[in-house]
Every structure is written in C-alpha cells, then in structure tokens.
Amino acid sequence: MLNIPKTVKMIITDFDGIVTDNCVYVDENCNMTRKLNFKDIMAFSILKKRGYKVAIISGEASSAIELIKNKFDINEIHQNIRIKVDVLKSIVEKYNLAEGEYLYIGDDINDIESLEYSAIRITVPNAMPKVKEVKDIQITTQKGGEGAFREVVDCLIGI
Image (cartoon, rainbow, N blue to C red):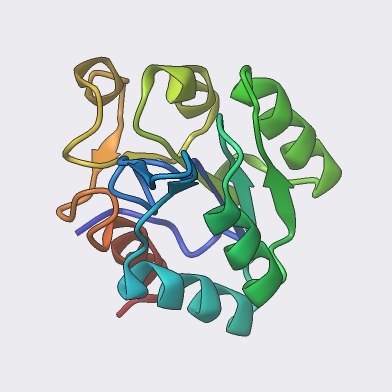
C-alpha cells in the first residue's frame, strides 16, 4: 500500500512506462501505437470526477495521450519534453501547489530530477534501476501499463 497523504490535489505523471507497458507497436506503415489498460483509463475518470487535477509530462508525443486528454479534459499535457523538471516546476507554480499537494510518477532516467524535486515520489517495479534508488521513492505493486496508475489513484482516494 502506497503512503499518499490526503493533502494531494494533483497527480503529475510520465506516460510511457506508467500508463503504458513501455512498448511501442509499429504497423506496416511505420505508425506507432501503444497499449492502454482499462484500469488505468478508469483512473483518469475517477480523478476528474473527484475534482483532482491531472498533468502528463511525456518525453514523447503520442496519440494515446491525445485520446486521454480529449476524453478526460486533462489539466496539463506536455509532450516531447526533454527536461521534465522545468515543466514540473512551472505546473507547481501555476497551480500554487505546496510540497504535499502533488505527487510525481516516473520510471526512467529522464524522470529522476522530477522525482527528486517532488516530496511524494512514486515509480513502478519495472522502472530503471537508478529510478528505484531515488531517496524515499515508493514503488507500486503493479507494473507500468498493468494497473500501476490505477493503484496510485486507488491509494489516493482510499479504495
């Protein structure tokens, strides 16, 4: 069980490796697609219905992110971001969030600065080893793309 304080108002997350299984599927026309788990999709719905703010900061652009954005009216979407911590800082400032009012979920080396900046840090079991070494990081039971995002949301709302 993750330790997520009730003071959290916003979830800020990476996408690939958290909401997806970190795989890219390429068709014969070289189009890339991603697999989404309905548990994780439902988590976005739960957050929005309960009034939580949501942000996605992704190193890649994806039609899957656009789908989530349009379906659930996500507060912040940032794609093709190389230095995520700068975007994270701007979101925290924009929404005037205190240290315990947001959490960050990430799984790869480009998330480490954002995880270290955040007081509430979460990753997945299949994250890169360096990510799992971040001080005070919490690790979900579920792997990325297999309900990890939903696990975070369920812990936040007390299910």
